[in-house]
Image (cartoon, rainbow, N blue to C red; front, top):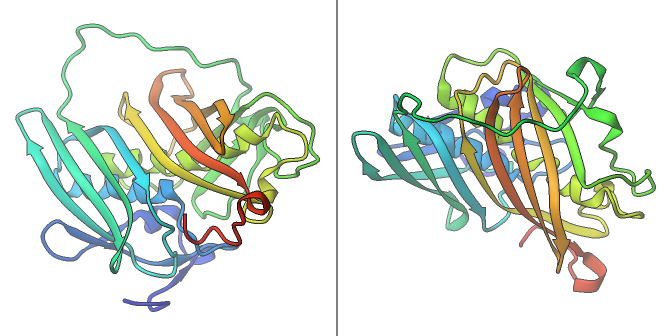
Amino acid sequence: MTGGEGLVQDDEVDIVTVLDLQEDGPGRFVSVPHLERDRTVVEGSQMLAQALVAAGRLVPGRRPVSAWMAFLRVADGTVPLEFEVEVLSNGRTFSAVRIEVRQGERRCASGHVLLDVTAPDVIRHHVEHAPVVGPDDCEVLDLGNVGQQVVVADGGYSGDPDAPVGPPRIDAWVRYSEVPPNPSVHAALLAQFSGYLSIAAALRPHPGHGQDDAHRSLSTAVNAISISFHSEVHADRWMLYQHHSTFAGDGMTHSECRVHDQSGALLASFTVDAMVRSMAASGVESTRVL
């Protein structure tokens, strides 16, 4: 498929379908292109999630325990993504997989996934999540993804540059409906949301700046995501994402984030490195190319 052929509109497909991939030969998978409401740019966390699905298909029966991906060029949501997956190591317990994401001759992203058969506990502990209200007491955030429910605590998210400032933190509860019984898909859905709110958390303490400025006066993009999975994921149950932006400066931001289930168990930890730059100061006219 090229161009808009086979294009799926967001209001016609749920997020589980977006992450589905078609086999295209040994170690090769192709996505179904779709068009986002406001932009045709593919979210980096979507490519990471699709990479987890591809890794799970190539190395079945093992749970992803960590993944890292750098987003090298903007990917067009109206054009299929091609995933080239190579098994670097496939031992008795661990498997390491390298993934390249391309559109034609363009390399859009590159990363690795580590999978494990897991083992019984020798030791176990986890950090507790910071206090937060439950999902029933949060404000709904509609991101336009059918099958995805997102609610934000304490008015933490607003795209309005003139909104009241707050700490560099956003807490959000997320869950998905009608998820197939495939552990790789559940882990991929957790990863899919990892790129959405970290930049907003970085902007929150700074008056006169908001998410609505992105791709207008601000050039923003997620550059890399690193995620560790600590437990089996059930994405059809509420998951608490706590985004904490620990640094902003030199045109970059860094966020350290955790995901807990509703009982408090730690499901995953992830970091996000992103850019936040003035279009006027840098002479950038478009974020189509990083």
